[in-house]
Length: 105
Image (cartoon, rainbow, N blue to C red; front, side, top):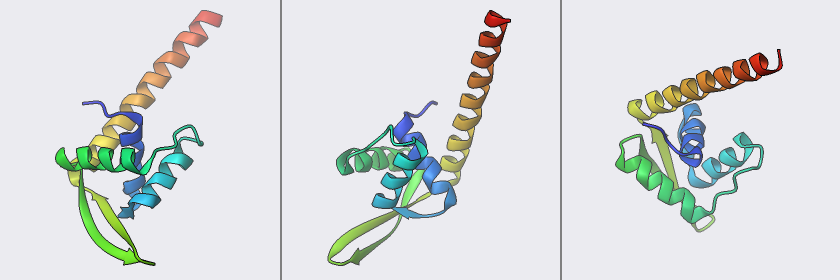
């Protein structure tokens, strides 16, 4: 099953290990070259959906400077899903580039 771009990039962010919401938000912006700027509410709604699908789990909570941070980590299913989606997008991109080459060749 395909995931939307925000969810895909959130999962990709977690490939490097547990992250708190703000870190995931910043990774999404960096991985999308600034195209995606997610609000905190949208991010946590996406993380809640990913949690419900057992793709991520809440890893820990901490308070820093009076602010709560929620950490998330990938499940094995989440790791499999993000890698499957990356492979699917890579194959689709190859096909599109091949078609473009054939059209101009």
